[in-house]
Image 1 (cartoon, one colour):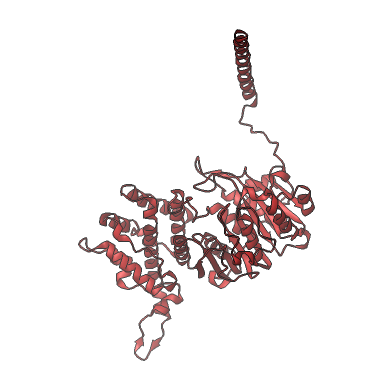
Image 2 (cartoon, rainbow, N blue to C red):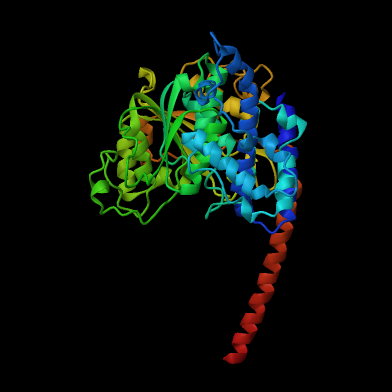
Length: 522
């Protein structure tokens, strides 16, 4: 199935499922988990059908012929041995006289029994749905195109549904907090290149960082995902933890996801052990109890506990502390953090002097689905090449985006590839960029790095120190001088002059009225 066909299938399935919700009494939040559960159920059936011939071919002939396949045989090829009552085809064929909600709840329980990583994480509240709605939903995911979809396709469908629910603000108090936009995740993965070892996300949401890492490994290595990496995630919210476990299962990624609060625990004990750290932590968290013994003695805070009621600089130290001597980190952070003062500035000074800060990227408004604020992407690298030890790449990408809608922006494929190529050039690597990528080649015609006003500049630690240890790229890259050729500057200036003249006339008239009134009073 081509990418275009996958996109079309995603859209068709979402439109059908969302139309059913729109005609029901359910909110997006009530609808989200049961629908994602049906996607998993359909996926499990497809994986089971794919695995059947492989499993049967691998069972050796014995004196009495081939033995029966076991659960372990299916797990060995990344599939679940589904009992008949848990098979999607069985549910789709149930007569209308049967209790469909009870049957789906039973299927979920049986899958949890067969797949321990999902135990207690699948939705089992289908009795809250109307029977007709459930049957219609089952039909949506039982089309021929869906039956033929492979595991990779289902992974993308699941992610697409997560994204669409996030855009509706489903299941999160702030809206969409379980899902980091694909553009930002992909840029982080492209920049740090997580192709081996231990991967950690201490604020993992629905596990999107791990999923994108899986795609990166498939595209850039000859290893299987689970051979190349070990994934460890921590997530505070119960529902998000369940989403992450299902997401990893859908993508065939083995990982350990623990429900815990990263401020008050370090459940995976990965201090200085990680090859890669990726995260989109909650911004500007206040009310962290800094009086707790665990917080006061936390080895993950080597540069000190920030005094402000804001946890941004706690997260930034966690990411630093988890890295091994050659580890890399990429994470999303509130824009205010690059210039934060007082105790946070002192911590930032130490981070900069540690020579671990590798790159800062400014991102424009509207990349997140339910909030419009801009953000920054920070990148650490404890294994910088010697010539870059005292350097930082500043990238101002606030004018680099594609408008998806009036309220949502993302990076186009060319822009993602181009920004990644700038990072590669900074590192002294050969950029992987297509010949027809005009975004990149217009800016770097000879394929070599150069500072570009308004876009990128390599600065030294000393230059940053001279700028009050600010890590805001706009302070260094300057403002581009290019004019918008489609904009009529002369006409606009004339219009502004007319408006100014009118306002001045009104001001003079008002002044005369006030003066006259004062005379009468006197």
